[in-house]
Amino acid sequence: MKDPAKDLSRVSDILDILAKIPEEQIPSKTSTPIIAVSGGADSILILHLFYKLWLDKGIKKPVVFHLDHALRKESNKDLEFVHQQANLLGLRFYSKRRNIYSLSKKLSKGLEESGRLVRYRSLFRLARKFAPAYVVTGHHADDYLESILIHLIRGSGPKALATLPYWSQFDGDFIFRPLMQTSKDEINKLVKQHKLPFIEDFSNQSEQFLRNRLRKTVSPILKKEGLMPPKLWLNFHSENNFFMKKSNTSTKQLLTKSHDRTLKLSSPDYLLLDRNFIITHLAQKAFWDYCFLVLSCPPANRAFLKELQNQMKNKNSFSLNYKCKNFYLWANTYGPISLFRHNASALAPFRQKLLEEKNDKSKEILLRYNNRQKIITLYPNESLKTFYDGMRCTIKSGTKKLSKVFQEAGIPLPVRKKIPIIFDEKTKLITCILFSFWDDRKDRKFTPK
Image (cartoon, rainbow, N blue to C red; front, top):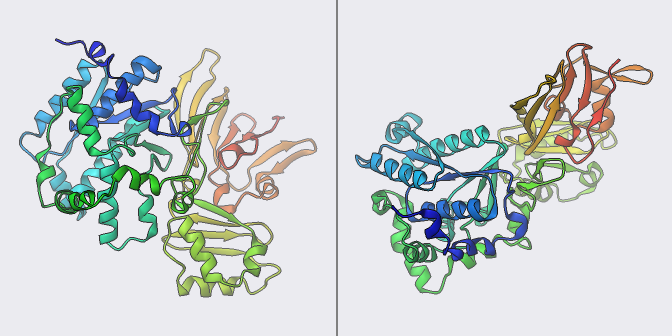
């Protein structure tokens, strides 16, 4: 049997794929890559790319995942093939079998969408198991071309052009797509040149799916006229591009390791707005439409603008509280105005995972909230909690209500009950408020009595 490490020692041009990616978008070496491998040429190339990175560049050992959709009789052979490839490379392998046809009927969704839901749910579960970790997929430039064609056919707006960036995040889970500046032809050339084994999924030939029909008919015509998918993708994913700047995936610091072992991510799913600017802005609908575009929400409707006008009758002193299926708008009578997307990670509960319990009974915890991850230490009698009425902390003159601390710090009310707090179960007082999970300020520590 061939030694994969020996065979791949010559495959330097596979690593050249990373040369196209800006340095600030390269993932941290201390995070584990979870590779989604179907067995096709795209995912097999990704598998060997990260195998090579593990051998030569010292990244964390990759984990391989395969989803058996149970749509074809031979699907179990695909699973066996991927399992064999992972074993040959000495990589950990996980799989899941799910009848996607039955699930799609149950959910009243298409086969592709149902498969995608199961696949990412399983991948994110693995990412949490190996946290800090990120998911890697084999999406490439031709996938981008097909995706924007589908979006345009379905009536999507300008934000469709910013789809499939290098990085995406969903409630703190990260997806990396290293092949977005690589065409399908380049992938096939590399796979053929280095004789990498792969399998063909015959469902990709079925004209039952819109994507396949576009791939077989429309895409070849566009390419024949001179369209180059990698260049098209780059045109709408440059840092200087309007859609990239305003999309929810515009970030340079995703999964970049910092000195305090935090995985940083800007928070584009909420905005803090200056109330004085809003009061004086003449074109209210245009202003709010722009804000909603930034957050990938639909434009402002008449009902919202009318309710906003009612709540802002007193221009000198007004508070806001408006919630709908797309966003949550809140402000007290004097601070900035907070605008959250309905699924903003700042409004979701924090998650924690025990990493290590030490001899002194202290614990290392991986804490995730608001698109941030951080390893913290909990000492004996300490636990993680969130704000509740009556919670107090110690100050020089005695104790102080936590609600007052949050108010003085300008923390929006919807966020106050979400920010992680280290609590001393023995004294029933707060040890530390983890403000750094909300913004870039320092955590505020308190000395228990």
